[in-house]
Length: 374
Ligand code: GLA
Image 1 (tube, rainbow, N blue to C red):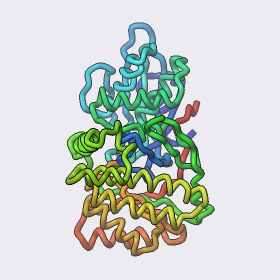
Image 2 (tube, rainbow, N blue to C red):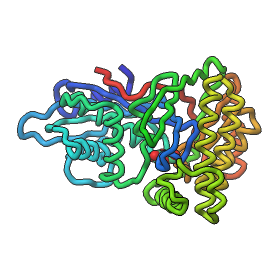
Image 3 (cartoon, protein in one colour):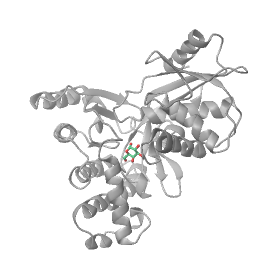
Image 4 (cartoon, helix red, strand yellow):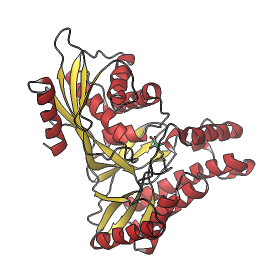
């Protein structure tokens, strides 16, 4: 068992007494390319990271109230009463499962994890996915993974109240180790694309810019609304259906946002081809182009994220870009393995020169999606 899984089991024993029936864990993610495309019916290419949230669960006895415990916050919560805490995610999942007609009995759940929180690495999708897979197994529901992902998205959209797309939940539930996941966010078909960084002698370096993100109260919903407006001006259902030619009839914000979505979908498909051919020069070039488009057309970058990507370019990264929603959070870079220490030093220095918050750096390997550990 992984350390997070052991920690969840230990927390369960200490809080609830006895052994848990099951231990499940689910990862956070980074998105390699295809940003702000999921809610436009387009394509995304995330990979799971080797940071997870684990949950140990047991069925509650008759008359027992469902209790949730977080080892990271050292807090116990009841299943009722939304309170804008971490507990809203498991609450939302249980709620969405019941809404979908599944029978969820009383249960006890203890969580422990090592996904950095609030950094744009999808700790929320990880706790949702872990809860969903755990409840599915505990109550013998037999819901497939894609349907569990949809349930998790519903929990996030309609219970927690953040209008995210499907990418993060899909990544957490469906990714495979050593691979990225190509998702067509309209048909919801997904397929693994091998991501053999070791063979390419590359490392996936993640820079947490330490700029707090707040998805709900930032421009995320605003960007979404502009895309919907642009789609309706073009007479298409979603921007996935818009072409480069269509863009000529738009102007202002609608033009910029739509141009990002149309070009990003095209870049993603080229990037998948490059990956399949093991062409990381081309893949990296597309990452840089994606960042420029997010910065200039979608306007979701920050000076910190731009500084990282510029420093990455100067210090030998094959590609780099912000990852996730933007407005702070993380950026990624593909860096030759032997150069990662010098690389992060240089980036750290670029931040120091501009008197930005000290960034945090991680090196992740493409990891497995949600799993029942025991
Ligand atoms: C957040 C959302 C995702 C996706 C990205 C941007 O991570 O949760 O659904 O929209 O932003 O690509």
